[in-house]
Length: 193
Image (cartoon, rainbow, N blue to C red; front, top):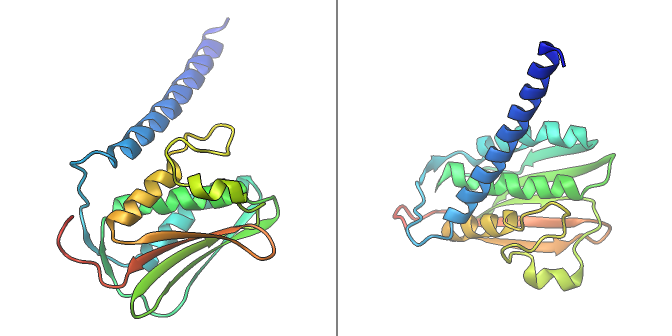
């Protein structure tokens, strides 16, 4: 082997190791959510900006799968006291699932909206939807319908949303696909739980 070929091979291995370490780090941080000492670090957050960031971060992965992501903010959404980093990761997990569930040449619609009582972020895909038998265990740790899924993404997302005093409502769409709707109280409590 030439020195250049050896360097290229070594770079490939380093990149693969880097991806593996990032995956492991993400899995470990997901698992930390389940420890008793886990605390949210809340600060006022403009959710429109946060959701826009989530959409932009997923855009390249969506394009690679030939899936479009549309984002709309309906009405005025007041800033909420949330753990920006954790909530962002939870939303990324949900959007990643929506993109991966969607067939090529389809669109995932992300909507941010609010009522007097709640703020919601919904992610609607046009995939196959969720089998009735899978609904009860959808948020169970290590349950996955993906070939290489860890089964922690939805569990992590649900835990983070619950720590924000919210819930994730899941439904199949009438025509095709599923909608995951994160519902948070419109006025988050300032104290940490």
